[in-house]
Image 1 (cartoon, rainbow, N blue to C red):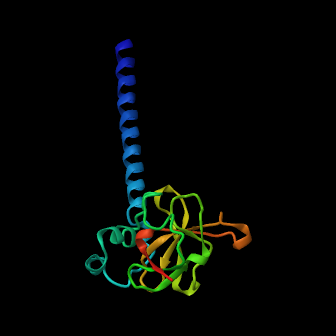
Image 2: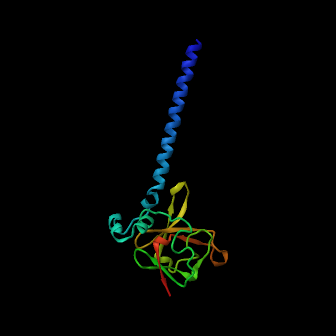
Image 3: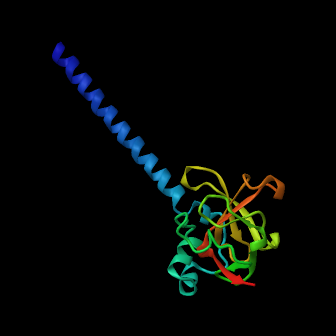
Length: 172
């Protein structure tokens, strides 16, 4: 009798272990799918990714096509204080101005607003297990960064947190 109880407990433990492994596998699959391409699926690129790969540098491609994010404080424009405009690295369209740039202490170039709101679009980004507002270039569908509601309140309250690799700076 005691032997039968031991076998039943052992079978239950094996079943529990299998259920836990299954739950881990499903969770990993969910996280992988949301980190790789969920935001890209919500945006239509104006050209196939293979075409952008021929036009953009590897860094620009990673950021703009694959929705990558630069390392904070290790990018070209986070600490740029020169006067000028920031244009799309893909199209040359003027997107942001140094007049609207501020130090958000995040390590990325941050702006209170775009130069022309019709040049960008905001789409929901559910990658990395969170919901954020992704900023894309409207004409191309390419990823630029994200916008948050923690910007300077006296300047509209928005923080357009952009990737330097998605931009080129043109000095005035």
